[in-house]
Image (cartoon, rainbow, N blue to C red):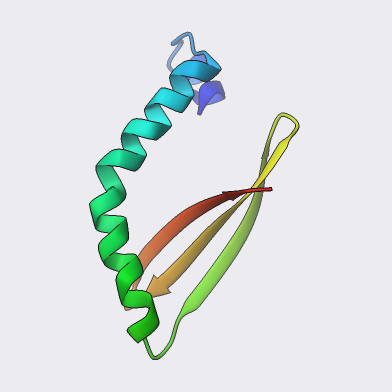
Length: 78
């Protein structure tokens, strides 16, 4: 995200600002996420994708579950 903001939009970016944006996005999407996540145990078929990513020295996995073609993303730091 920081690279996109700085290189494409020519917008200075700091790690603190990125964390603030991530927290705002998480808070805004939390009700939808909770609703979809609550449906997972009742699904007959569930597809899960795990995609590794890395930012600096930190590694993470973006894990996405699909139920009835509705993605339920989550981010897990390793």
